[in-house]
Length: 477
Image 1 (cartoon, rainbow, N blue to C red):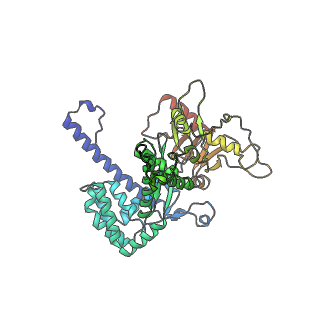
Image 2: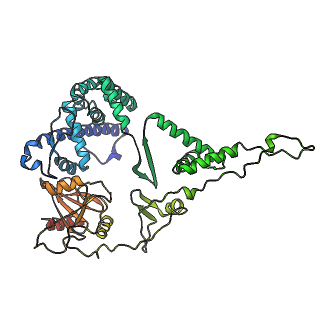
Image 3: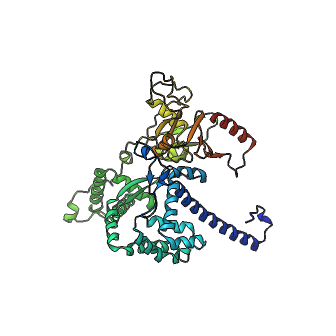
């Protein structure tokens, strides 16, 4: 395909023809990536592992990423494939699993994918949904959905088709899966953030969600009756906040019921006193009010604000993402108590001789390198393992100051195992800058801005980047 960048020279019809050609090429590339994933799994079969080392702690093991009937694969190979195509190790393992399932367990669907009749995304969805099925059950689903997977029906209907086929493949197993799913209940905060907002996801039987929805709606109506003029969505969020303190929630509903059912005020003084038992009762007092400050729990948030001469107006809240300082004042200011801590001197952290990493070093490393330092690592948790880039030497002749800023790298346990027991190499020529070499010689640069491939055939670097790359490669050699 000839890829032109002078699109302004194309007529309307020619532009659409070019778009169709590009879309077809994109599908061909998606299919080729799946083929590559299959071949990568074949090359990295368990036979290449040393049987004497497999049972040792942390060593590479054989894993079956796909469903029943797919071969086991040497687990560290996912990191190599992921780094080359610019995705995380987990995403690469998912790619390999989907590709193997399609070729081995869903052959009808795979034939249509290779013929460019079915999008890879549709096929991979079926592969993921059928992963826990037997070979026979997967074949049944394959025969039921392959024809309709070409986009002839909307996505929502296709999802329902796949779900129904899975249930029909084995009704007893479907009932067992329902029982198993019933045990997979949770109520967790979402990881995604958007402009200072965050979600909370509840996975529970539908009657539990219906009850939760009803009580939230009831409290939202109470707040409206008490004079809250916010939109219903805002009042429902406030209702959830009220529910975080059950005693106050019960007290509010009790006070509201008494206030709502209180006797009405007389319209005016009567000429003749008339005995009315309803008006003999004492009024219940003023309208109930909600003490929002008392409902706010104690939560520690790490907020990073730049206070230099060139202020950015943006703060970073760990675990939440970037927000404006105006957002902090509006949402946290009325309720939070701020403790201002001095800036940590990253360069002035004194090295230590012990293998154990001091807390002050961990804080400094997290501020300097908040994300997993493996190529395209995505974790930003403070609970990551802190690795010594140059392995710590034990013994009487060990050099001093091995535990220091500039010889640390936060990583997940999986990536730590790959770095320690795989054929990957890493150097840290400057504090917070990591140069990785995969087992086949590809070089990756990881720093606070992310991951970049160095020396890739299709990349075009600026003269300044080339100078830096040469210097880093020289240091890493």
